[in-house]
Amino acid sequence: MSRAGRLLFVLGILIATASGFGVFVLLLLSQPKPAEVPTTKVVVAFQEIAPRSAISPDQVGTANWPRALPTPAGAIEDPAEVVGKLATTSIYPSQPILRKMLIDKAEAKETHSNAALILEKGSVGTAMQVTLKSNVAEAIQPGDRVDVIATFRSQSTNPAAASAVATQRLLADVLILQVGPWPQKPQAQSGGGSSTAIITVQLKEQDALILEYAVLHADAITLVLRPANDHDLIPLEPVTLDYINQRFGFKLPR
Image 1 (cartoon, rainbow, N blue to C red):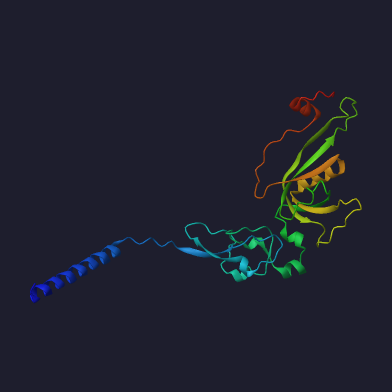
Image 2: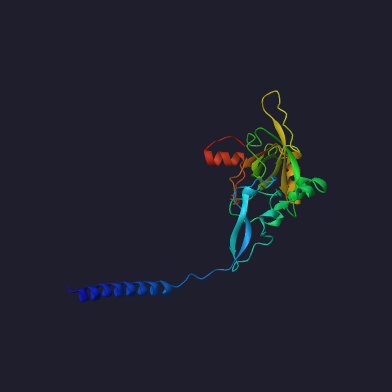
């Protein structure tokens, strides 16, 4: 091949390469860009935060919240407003932290009790004594939810009804505010190896009256621990001697 032919050949390769690169650039520029979604910064939990615990810097951060969605009422943009505050409730990873979930340490110490500050509006706190059995072998912790089960015996003067006994769920999905006294003190151990304690629960005021009546008049009260984040309730049938006879085939006389 002559020198002129070689030059033409090389020139053709360069032109083809440049053309291909140009086509690639045009295709790249013609690709539709993803639409930018306007967002707002909100403070969220990076780790689970226990109730009444001070929030540390490594437990929180910011996330982008789409402006097309309503921003949660009381959301916070700056993590500095959260760090050092006390959580009033359990806060879970990725959950936005709201102002109502926080207590200022100084306010809690100087103007209100911790219990009063963490109570939800429309509710009251009440204490009840529990035993090793009735508080699920001391498995119950602040922030847990329990059902209250009570056994009542008939107060009728009719001999036929005087022995009637029924066990039923009395209150459901009750929030445990505290286990032990306020502030927390070591629980005294009894000589028999079991222990008794005081727990504080959050209830609607009418339910607080129901619990007080049961404490005074029920033959027995016990607590059952609910799974975390399970608030679903199923209807229960009171358990009586007739129920035991019918379901399990006992033929005990009434």
